[in-house]
Length: 114
Length: 116
Image 1 (cartoon, each protein chain N blue to C red):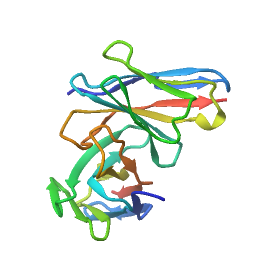
Image 2 (cartoon, chains in turn brown, yellow):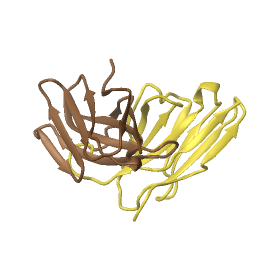
Image 3 (cartoon, rainbow over the protein chains, first blue to last red):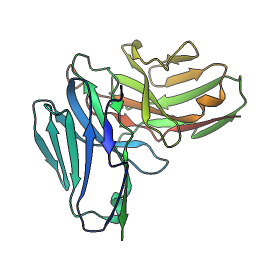
């Protein structure tokens, strides 16, 4: 089964607007993380939210987590052209240890039009 | 700022050849990972490594693959007898010990493998 599926697959908005991306997952998790990937580059960690948290903020980022619906959302406020990238959610399993691999979704490709 | 470094950035090889991808994780990190991303697709977990041994591996990580930390700084992924479908971007990542569960991963820029 797919773990960590984002929607939409692609999103194009105007600079200054807010961008919202969603992620759904299937298994119990310890935490959920969001990463950003510029084209052809490595992944950069944005924010981590634990299973006992419902909302977290970091700068222009706001993440929510609803464990009853097994879903999360990433909101980027006041978007900038430099926010153009792919955004991935990744889940850490509930039952594992520190070396467990994260399971990534397919990502949302965000384009900010100047 | 400390970073994960990977070499080579791009390797082209013939089908059936062996390749070694190298990574230098962040120096005080204890957990190491390899992921791969086939062009345009999702990032897939291959293997995690802790305390000089494999901690977890995915179904993708079969006998064709092996990992090693030969000298306390490098972390290598060896792919034997490469196949066309091994063409992908391979990412190394490392993590500090933050408790009992997987925390933030720091990724390298990746090694693009092209198998002809």
